[in-house]
Amino acid sequence: MEGFDNILLTQTSFMPQKKKVFLEDNIKHGKEIDRDYNKLQDILDVKNLQGKIDKIIKSQEDDFMIAYREQMTDVQKELKNMKRKIDEEALRQKADEKKRILEEERDYFKEEALRLDKLCQEQLRTIEELKFKLKITLEEKQYYEGFVIDSKKENKALKYELLYLYKQKSEEQKAGAKVSQVVDVGHRNNMKKILEIRPDMRPMTQDGTHVSSTKDEIGEGSKRGFSSVKKTVKTQLSTKFQDQGSSLHDFYKRDLSSQQQSRQNQDMQQIEEISKSNVIQDLKQQLQKEKQLTQQLKVELSQQNCQRGELEQILLECVAEKKKEVHSRQCLQKQVLNHRYLDVLNQDGDTNFSQFTHTDKIALLRKYIESEEFFDQLYSITFNTQFSISSSLKLNEKWKMDADEANKKFNHFKTFKFKHITSQPILKTSLVKKNEREIISISNNFTEKTKGLIDKIIKN
Image (cartoon, rainbow, N blue to C red; front, top):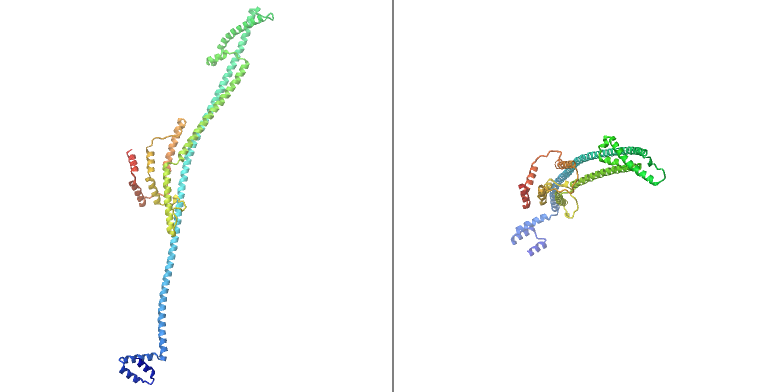
């Protein structure tokens, strides 16, 4: 073959006919080689080569443009679909955002309405309590006004009685003065009679013996005359002084001088003033004692009303635990929404009772009822008949009855009057029935101690 190639390349005068004969004679595949050689000659022709290349390039460009147009139409269709999907997603997000905002506004206005309703109920309850307290204070005012009026009447009666006694004693003093005047007149008459009967009794000299003897006799005569005159005056006294008995008789026995009468008048005035001041002081002390007793009663009632019971303390503990649970749940929800980790235990924040859902409230009631302390307190309240009073109030029977009746009315008012009244009637839906069934099923989860307490309550 190498020799053949060299022959073909070097021999320029080698004719095609000879080549064909040579190939057919010497080479096994000469015909095929000749055919391929002719094809190569046609391809390598300079005139036809450029046209063929242009045709090939044009056909390739046409195919490329067709494929490019098809690809671009597909891309445009995909872009339109993506744009339509993006618009739909944006509209859906806007609708969801608007829906969320409206739901938040609805929840806010709902909570605000419930808060205002609760505040209104509390204000109405406070008004009822204030009305009841005003009624009690008005009753106390009427009672103390009556007490003061009675005290004034009693004081006035005592004043009148003191004036009457003063007038009576002044009349007695006037009667005593009249008696002393009558005694003096009788004494003078007796002296005249004695001097007329015994003229030798006149003092003739300055001797002290005669004078002393006459004085003794005059004293004895005056005594006798005083006794006789006293008997006559007794018959002449009015029936008013005779009824007073031995006290007036003893009073008239004494011979009172003008100085003694003035002293007695001063003493009587002092006694009257002292008695008046004592009566006024006693009335003031009694009024002060009554005020202290009423103040003590008010303090005890306020302490009983303001003192926080153990059941209330248990409920507050349950509410605090439930608030922690609700707060942790809200933090977890925020963590899921924000796609980031939040420290639930160390996060500060306060959860209001208004943020509790219906299920949270039912769980709170369930936790409160299932507590052991609740049943202990319920048992002690139900079967404890001993009621100890911190201080015994010394009131009269009428005031005690009024206070007991007022206390009973107040307790009855607190237990039955202050029930939560909603503006709309409660419809017993399937959710409420389901919650009632859940509350009833709580009794199956009681411990042995609580079951024992319930059995004791049922037996008693």
